[in-house]
Length: 94
Image 1 (cartoon, rainbow, N blue to C red):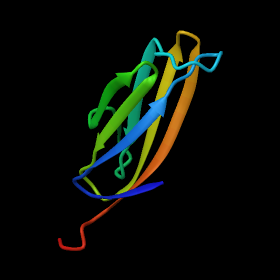
Image 2 (image 1 turned 60 degrees about the horizontal axis):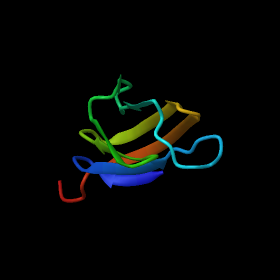
Image 3 (image 1 turned 90 degrees about the horizontal axis):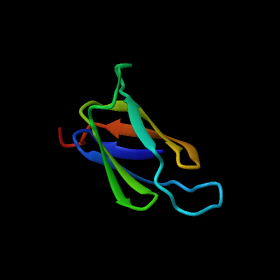
């Protein structure tokens, strides 16, 4: 679990590998986040394909609480689900 201050962006790097273990780009990559208020969306997520099989996910946070990120890659002999919990806290100066 990562811990960040509300208003900042959490970064996750995910590698997708094919059935032979080689880095490979999935045909489909999706990401959704469940926000502290219970809403599920892909709106605050930016996905960047940094290299073959390597994707960076940037989640812009706007509320304190627990965020749950689910990233899925499928197709092209790739099948992976990555899950992450992000603890977003208020700044001690606010």
